[in-house]
Amino acid sequence: MKITLNGEIKEYRDQLTVQELLQRLNLQPERVVVEINRIILSPETHNVTKLKTGDTIELVQFVGGG
Picture 1 (spheres, rainbow, N blue to C red):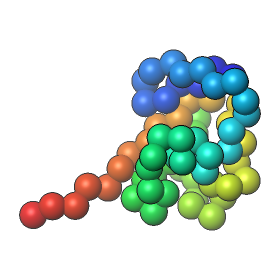
Picture 2: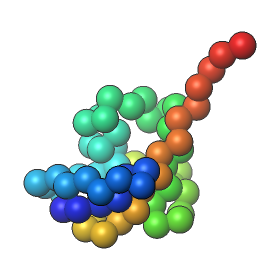
Picture 3: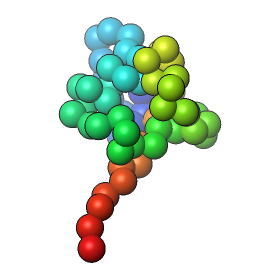
């Protein structure tokens, strides 16, 4: 499966859910906004939304600081 992730083409052998992708990238779901094909996903759908070849995914992380 080939996807575009934050502007870079990535290839994965198996189909992943959004939750599985975030786990592989070591990202905390509660600190990330996920957009697939210009649609922002609600966190409740991460475990059921399957990625497909050709999807464009943008991940935006919240960063704390002062």
